[in-house]
Image: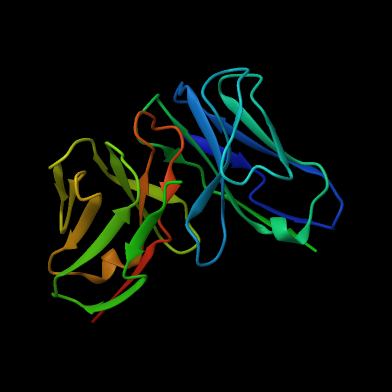
Length: 111
Length: 112
């Protein structure tokens, strides 16, 4: 099992550009999550999903959109990137209320 | 709003010493998670504490949960260099595990 994978691993964007981060899991987990991690701060939840076709806002959802068309995939979109979105993005998945398993992260820089 | 505080934020300790990291949270919750993160890496699950009084141990690390005091501790016994990492606690609101709030992390540095 690959666990949780994320694509891409690194990306540099210019302000105003758009991009999509892909998260995939092969553990048949119901729940999936997107977090961002900034220096000196813990992880903050952006959006999450409790099942295929459902999404919900987390703590810092502004500027991001998500979709979960298939159970194993969770996409995070930035429509118009801003320098404040420079961060490391982690995807995670869990089976209902159990512990979350994290992907390797995507390091995004917005110039 | 659920807030999670960890202390200390940074801990430098010598090999062989013992120390405790504290995690306090502000509202009711019935479970707590501890994660480890190495520099530039992802988060690795260490402990899942599911009830008041829960205690889990793995090697030189032992975690406990007191839901009445809203406090969890991560105790390090006879630290070794390999334990150097950042440790996070994370708490969900009562009745759900889908929205974890993370502490800011404790960066542990174990020196020879």
